[in-house]
Image (cartoon, protein in one colour):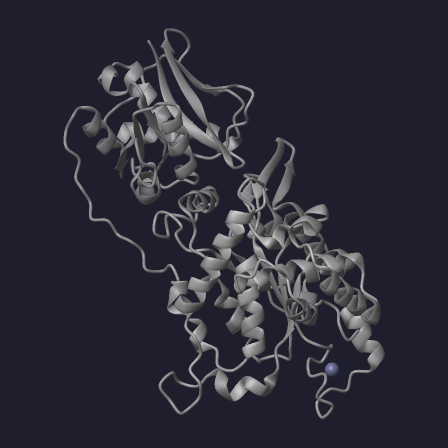
Length: 509
Ligand SMILES: [Zn+2]
């Protein structure tokens, strides 16, 4: 009595088909599971045995062998419980074979036969569809992410008995779909909430328009976090392709079920400075994407940048340079995507109040030392630096309808401009790997940000006056390119260069 069930698993960000083979033969009564399995996979034996017993199915005193293939891949997690249980029932002749064909099963079993949610349903179902599998049976709690994949029949069930009912052609109870409200809606926030701060808002719009990384410097409580949180509201919406990419990461991390099934908003990730290296980069025994991947296609905001450990800032280098991160484990290395707009905030000095000498007592040496903690490779990756001043504070928390204070522009209006600037860049880079000006490096800067004679001379003067590096030159060109695009100007003018130079990083040091 032999049976083979189709299942699937996630390996890093990739998912693959896993076959669960069950063979029941005469011999010493034994139940064994083989095929390069982690401990929790082997523990499926007990969960399956008990769940089956509660279904009224007792394992016969025979030799039961379960093999998970391909054998070269280490199988982890508890998603194989359901295919193992279905395989055993089928091998015992208790299920109609034709209903199992071309169907994929995933899910963790409780002892009472309840089916629990698992991680990575979205990429597993997407892979099943690519493999031509016609039907996927998944845990009810994962229904939204399973149904996000079009072109494959998804049956979401809450228990083993429902699976059996379904396989016998009975209609299964349709449960009401509960969409959890816990998902914080970022679109409740709006740029118009930020009063004053025109300079910082302008810098944020430039950053969003060209996907430039940005550093905000200002004393505590001036609204740096408030501004950063609203940047996702002016970024272009995720494309269908990007949405699937981001959702896959959240699915693998087991966070998608709590949300709307699929990610439609760009993520905003704001880690605390006490975060561990593993939580930041990703990893763990059962590998899980870290904070840098959770921010993929969105914003990674690091407040109090210099409070983070040096090791954390070191981890940032690879994502900022390559848009992804390698996680190395004994089982192999996994590549996770990690392309985001990096927004950082820091105080101007150790006490936070420079240049207000009534409050700041830091010496020039202390101040220099503090700013020097920003490592050069990190600074190289930040295109825009802006100062956020207290002057705007009285506008900050003003009620919308209150007073005569100028009502800021809302996110919807700004986003329209950002999208238009994005379209200009899309057109320019259509036959390249580049999407936005912020990604330009080396030769490409010369190619796409070419300056006329007069502009070149002007930038040269700026370079000499402030003794700027080649990297600073490139950054000014890139930011000037974005400012020109925002004005729909093909030519980069003196004005564009002048403004871009004002955002250079490390000024006043
Ligand atoms: Zn100070």
